Amino acid sequence: MLLYAGGYLTFYTPDQKPEVERVLPGPVALRDLLTEIGIPAAEVQLVILNGEIVDLNGTQVQNLDVVKIFPGVDGG
Amino acid sequence: MNKIDLTVLELERYTRHVSLPHMGSEGQQRLKGASVLIVGLGGLGSVSALYLTLAGVGRVGLIEKDRVSLHNLHRQILYTSDDLGEDKLSLAAHSLKQHNPEVDLKTYPQRLTQDNALDIIKDFDLVIDGTDNLETRHVINRTCATLGKAFIYAAVNLFDGQISVFQASQGPCLACVFPQISQAEQEKSPEHLAVLNTLPAVVGALQAAEAIKMITGLGKPLIGKLLIYNALNATFERVEIQKNPICQVCGK
Image (cartoon, each protein chain N blue to C red):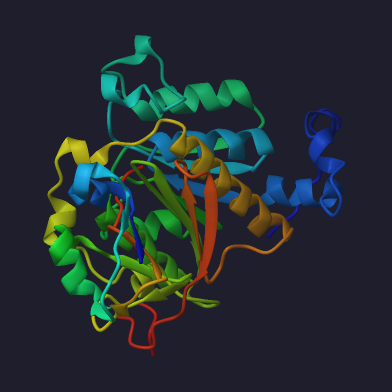
């Protein structure tokens, strides 16, 4: 599973690298995965799972999924 | 949108536009007859204001209250090192007028708030979001939804940019995608506002392009779609966004 942490969420990933790869034992709740990586779920405003916008709550991810998460970006 | 006849000099100025397939002098006349409000003249607003002025949009509204700071200058192309401490609005209007004296500029030396938004936005066909905060974006969104107008949203952060066209009568609104402002969103360190300096240039130019398309009818605007640009991987991803039936702004 590949997670892309967009915008300032990159600051929370290991070595501040936007892409985090994980081999998962099976489907896991995205919210739990974010907690394990150290990304505050409260700061995630947009989740794109395999090209579609989904709700963070209730979303599960598994191997081969590509997940992109973004904060409610406020830069201009 | 209204059309206004072009002068001989304008036909010469915009000849590379007029020669475009499906643009012609009629498209350019629509640009001259149009009015666009640009909220915020930072990284995004500087670029979209410049390109819409150069494109010959007849009336351009500018809202900005800040003064030029040193940390603005790596990306905000309407200001120079000589402008530190000066007010952005006057500088931007002067620069834009030099770029295209044909354009009628209307300036608003204030912040856009829920109290003044209706009065200001009602006089324009389209709104460009060049703000640097979600709160003002939601003010624009609510007001445009009330007035039935479109606004062209964009945001940039680190290496990522987003753009969409929100028109509640034809698709989702901003609140359908970003329904609330978290406390974390409102309290950010300067580090969190880091941005690659070319990012607002790319995304601001895309905003201007969407505005030109909306005014002239060219192409398909980004209504119901969110375009995400990633500078690190040099990718554009376009995702569908849906109307939220229980959206507090545009839901029924």
